[in-house]
Length: 220
Image (cartoon, rainbow, N blue to C red):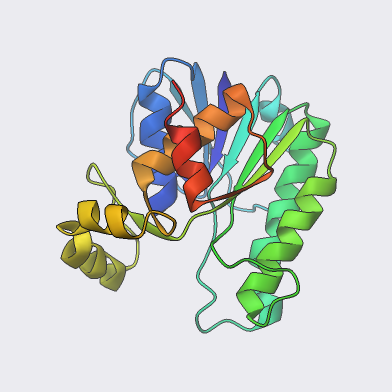
């Protein structure tokens, strides 16, 4: 399987990239970034593109890929709805529409626990609208991941400094959190493994909550 990865420098994307590079089912990864990165692997190619709303000059580089793992996203904290929608909805759909034209079969989108197109929270409505729009596109498969708390593992770090402080403080209690809050707690490793699994094997649901992510990750 050949995979396109967006958001590979963020916390979730770092974990997904690690699992892709280690999994023999993933033959090649095209890492789409705005700036050059230092990660090296014979399985990895980088596509550096500053403008994520215009793929005209590089669109043919998406040919012959099987799946897209879309881990790109921002926090809604401090953003108004128009700005958040442009990055979350407009950008995601601009990428997805290009990939549909290029024959990508599977699109896996990282949403979030509590997403609801008709909800009270602004971020939940925008994420929900994005999920709905993706499901209307003619991909063979669309999966929306709604993880709750995600523990970074294997040296993965967030770009947000205070997030890392929280993860470091809670890291020792992660095994206990998994036992007592199974429906709300996952890890970067589990999310990455689950993405590969649903792209290869499919899944009975289009929307995967935290417990579904755990089930998909455990498939051989």
